[in-house]
Length: 207
Image (cartoon, rainbow, N blue to C red; front, top):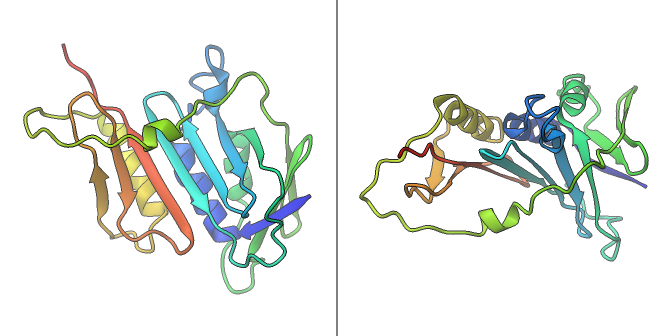
């Protein structure tokens, strides 16, 4: 079965979420974190997530038109190599003359289609992706007492991800849950239509 999503939003979501993936650094120790999690829900929503254990990015893409979406269709999920997904979305061009949708065909392998291009990616089956929703559901009230420190490169990536998923590259970035020792949530101030994005970043701990 193939599911279609807006090409520009899918490209933005993969590009932004991949910033939090292991990016090959975990190839031998924890290769699961070099992958991006794709999960489709019965209402057609596609949830895309990645983490390297120190940060987490998650985007949701909603179908432009729910016509034909089977509400009782079983959930589908796969872990796909982040570099393979990035190489595919780099082929995707946006504009009036460009095809407006990307097709995701579930199966072994998973097939991505756009225009004349098709990419087959074998799902990773060497582990289970962390239950990141528990982290996103946790709210921490600021205590106003402790200085929160972040890896500067990770902080830039969080801002970049929010910028990619925003309607304007000059929009502000929202920050929630500042508390020493707890993760902070970064979100676009004005996200792309029918999408959502969060970037969770763990602070640096000092003795």
